[in-house]
Length: 224
Image (cartoon, rainbow, N blue to C red; front, side, top):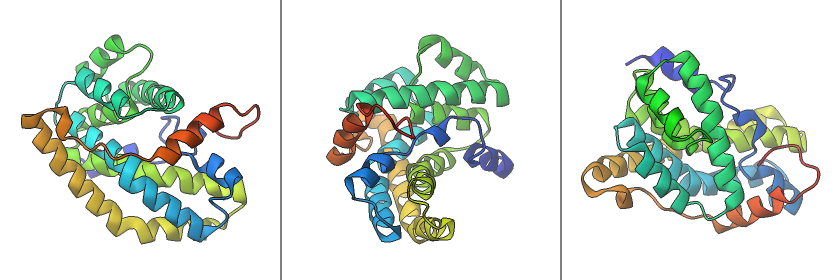
């Protein structure tokens, strides 16, 4: 297992398309739910324990070798918002392009053939971790961190928030992120025997509603 590979995969400069997405932060800023660092922390905490937990569980399950087609279908079922399903598939397609170039793998090639329009991003992330020689904990950490790192970075741009404050928010959330990863990996290991229903299914209705509103804007800074 390569720690260096984990750093490459988790690096915000890895060309996986995440920089174009705010994780719902853009809509939350316009709605007034994020107006500063304290609001950002509350938003990220909620996202971590819902969307982040689900993404981490699916990434871990994929890294453990569960059927990606089954995982993709289960991820679709857990994503009521058409806008978020589209975003997840677009992010998955971009990540798969970057991953196949960086860590060539027969599993990644097979996934690209099966899902030419993109599989859900956490499913691709798990297979990417496998191709890079990483384990389910690594995949889950990447997914969980993305769930809060993206909104934090986006809010710096959207509000001209002090980057030090945004980084402090992420540091304060670190212990919770570790606990979410533990829950996600435990669920993924159970899913090997019990099936995809054992994976997390936490919901965040306001994120879903916000995504649909955001998708209808004529002018926006981020894709989602």
